[in-house]
Image (cartoon, rainbow, N blue to C red):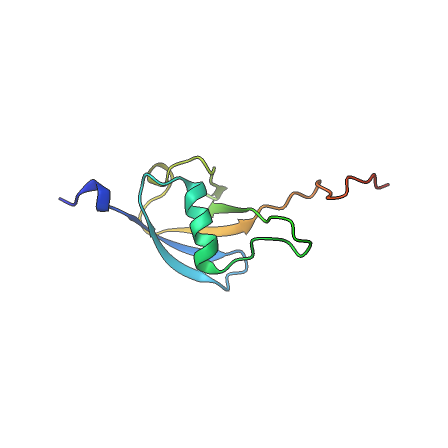
Length: 102
């Protein structure tokens, strides 16, 4: 039997465009938020918008067709060989200037 500290869950990860694809392994006790942060760096995804604002990403679990919550643990939400897609978190109603637009 494998020791719990060395167990990992293997995943297939792509970006929204489908152009970047990696195989990743992560411990089941990690949160989805921790996983996403690590994958952004591993995949070389942009961390800011063209205006320099921070860009956040969500993980979409293809098996269930839903976005995962950053606080969920990998072991609770994911299974071996699951496919997740990293998508930028677009906040369409947020304006950087705060100006009123009609």
